[in-house]
Length: 412
Image (cartoon, rainbow, N blue to C red; front, side):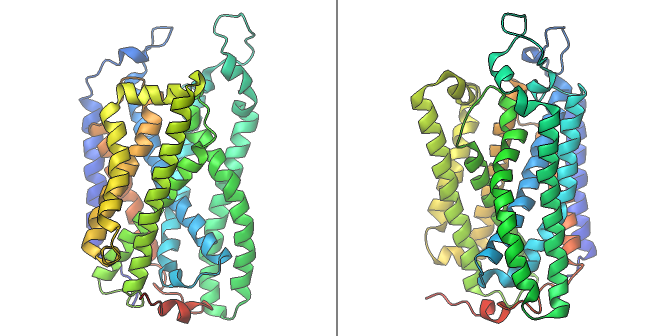
């Protein structure tokens, strides 16, 4: 039985998006902050518009990461020749459909900054012709000038983003062709392509994290940052996929997915929560106790000015999965998985927020109507796109060589 995107489901996602848009607009209208710390040397206060752009960028990156994580996971399943996840393959493929829109939003926001529309990326407004001793010279930006040069930054960004879109379309197209053709030709073709993609993703996920997030704090260094972002990205994608699978199960669909399959998805959420925690702790401990000025400044800005939210993000994202998903039966309990999933999903959105906002907003960042409204807007739009895509093709693949094996997963 295939999924039908009902009028009720359409209305719910549209209402979530419209409610988010309304809250976002109210936030823009009634934003009474004066943003004194964001006044430029020429006297221009860019704080009010900056907050809007930061909110849009945060959400664009967050939902882009969800699609990218699932793209990586599809390639990983092919490369590892895994069978258990075959019954969920169309769910993962549907989540790829939001990728082009999110990439378009991100690139548009970065381009607007290049033409002085905002000051999220300080390096976009730095004069690379300045030499040491001149007024406005920045030693670190001078040494990073090659990476930030438009003739390097944008081609690299477009190459990786274009590659991600191409592979997403490739996997979706090949999946339908495999249903029609049968056999193993397409499967092994995908196996080879996945090996190539994993190499591109290995470099691209780190470089993209430097370009989109790390460069907001352009003076900062962290060799672990790409891994930290990757672990959070992967977890976000698996949580969203799990929520989607449980939703489909509640509709009486995906009958091939038994308790063992749900348990496996729960294990991924549990394990990746620990991977993210390990990366968080490792990055913080190494940098904080080394006390190198160029590195520790990132944490000072967050611990000093956003103490509560910073540590709450860490403890919630670590403690909630550990406390509630440790037991094997808990990983099969749909109600518990939904509760944990919703908490982890929101607090990992906060993690992206706290990566970007303090660097772009200094001490003026906050969680208000603008941030929550934009989150709901993107959530509604992204979910609408995913569900529409899910309804456009059969919910279960027909000719995957590991389909029968994948249906019969047993846990003892």
